[in-house]
Structure formats: C-alpha cells, structure tokens
Image (cartoon, rainbow, N blue to C red; front, side, top):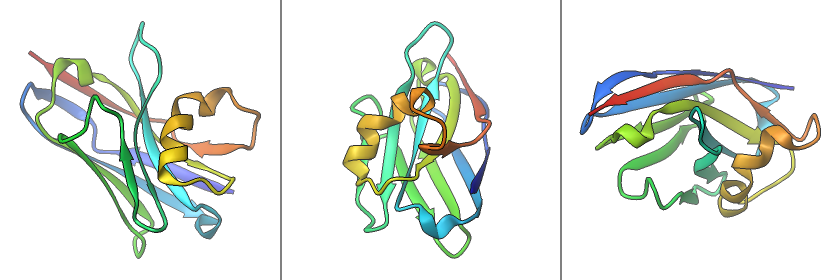
Length: 134
C-alpha cells in the first residue's frame, strides 16, 4: 500500500506561482512512476504531468513551459512547480501512482482515467485546491 498526501495549494492571481507537494509513504519502492491530474467543476479530468524512475517527464500541452514536475527520492516527495498560472488552471490537483510499471508518457495518457479503473490499479491522494483569479 502507498499513501499519498498533497499540499501546497492556495489562491493566487493570474501570473503567480505555486508549488504543490505530494508526500508518499508506505511501499513506495513499488511505484515506478508518479504524476498529477486535476479536476475542475464542470470540466473533464485532465492529466497534467508525469515522471518515471528514469527521470523522464511528460506534460499536457496546456501546461508545457509553465509547470515542472520533479521528485526527491530521499524525501519520498513529488513536486509540481506551477508558474505563470492562469484562471483555467483552477482545479483540485491530485497526485497519483499506478501499481503497474508505466513510463511517464504512458502514465500521462492514463492519469485522467485512473479513478475509473478497477480498485487497486493506482493510488491517489485527497487533493489540494488551486484557485487562480484573473
């Protein structure tokens, strides 16, 4: 089992920055890749960014050049640095880790569907709210 706890969300004005953190505990050695997805009211769930154990990263087109995903293995923590935030970035952000071995590119394509997959396929946290005002 892996437990994930997100933090770092908040309210900022457009153009501002936030850094989200995701603290992982439990059997973290069983996860090869991790990522972030977001969910806004009335909008489809969206995979935002993913990273794998080789350090390969993958990003949604909507955040490329603005968001950076990274991980600190010593601290078992995943980060999402978000710069140049836009109102359309407003959402609940979740970190997730699939149980099967997936590359960053594979995970990015799957992030939006993780909550719909059979129980036990992936782990995710409770989320942290990001609100960007114009």
